[in-house]
Image 1 (cartoon, one colour):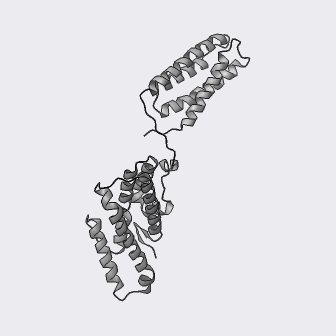
Image 2 (image 1 turned 30 degrees about the horizontal axis):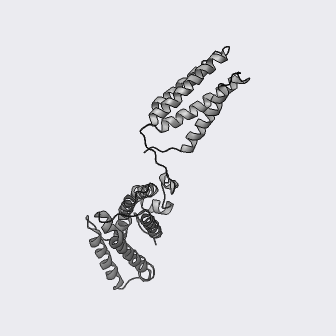
Image 3 (image 1 turned 135 degrees about the vertical axis):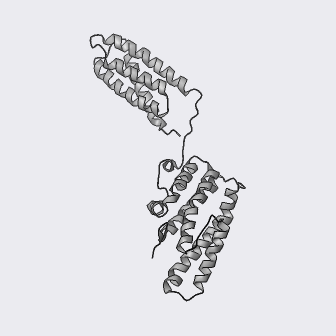
Length: 264
């Protein structure tokens, strides 16, 4: 996917337009060499922008114009300006031709999610590195308004803390469904809660595991089953609500839980 800032492109074209207007005047400007050198710099900046959106023919033409300016004869400024005017008109035509038939979309909301590699924060990223891909993709889908895809990636991301929760309870998994995994977690929590145990389990561990299991059950019944089996399409507003909820949940889990184990 290509990404560029359209405002830079517009600003560059406007700068070139101002310079070309000066070059088209009947009288040569006094500082013609200075203007040509500045024009060359603008051309190079424009070439980079053209390359970013794969307008390769136009980028090559801009490079050719730069070489003409560099190799100009200082004794014949009128000639070089005439050539530059002709090449400039041709550059605009090439840009228009290459843009013809292409479609550009713009992102108005959540723009930062397109480049943020840790949208859930450092703690979540460090605790659940295996979920990083789906967390990042969920953010990008949210920014691109691919709502159902966003929720799909969020459900995939939650696979990692669910597995970590199971491992922390010493539950061995073998590709079971969420329903079976959560049933095992509930049974293990009940088993530990009804046996003589340390105060740490009753005061700290039991509430943490119980609340986590309840939340995972809610996620399974409310979102995951419908998403993974293609039974529901999510609106943008709903996807954003689920995104915020999953982010908050994973942040909570990462305070004590990670792929390496359970912190004290």
